[in-house]
Image (tube, rainbow, N blue to C red; front, top):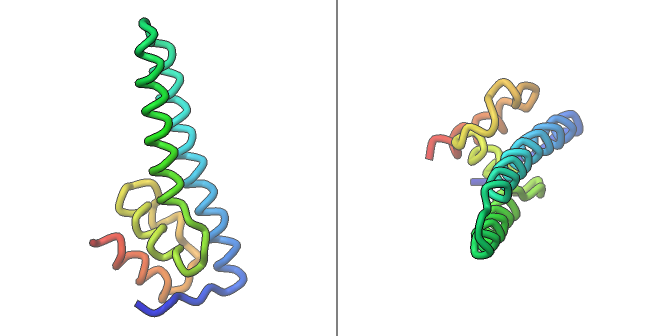
Length: 106
């Protein structure tokens, strides 16, 4: 797939959408972390919490890549996972939206 072109206005929308999705996912991880930590009863429960955080960090760091060459794939994945809606992508050009939707359909 050829690299997508991002206009100045699309770049602003993309940054907002990217940050919104990232903050949502980080909030989910934070809530789960707090719940797991609060329910920890034994010392070994700490390591399960730490393991959860490490796994979540790896997943987030591999998923959220704000390079313009990667945004179509990132947004397609987030759309497929339900972390973004098509409404949130409003304002992006038809070509980029089409590419994102194609990735989401995989």
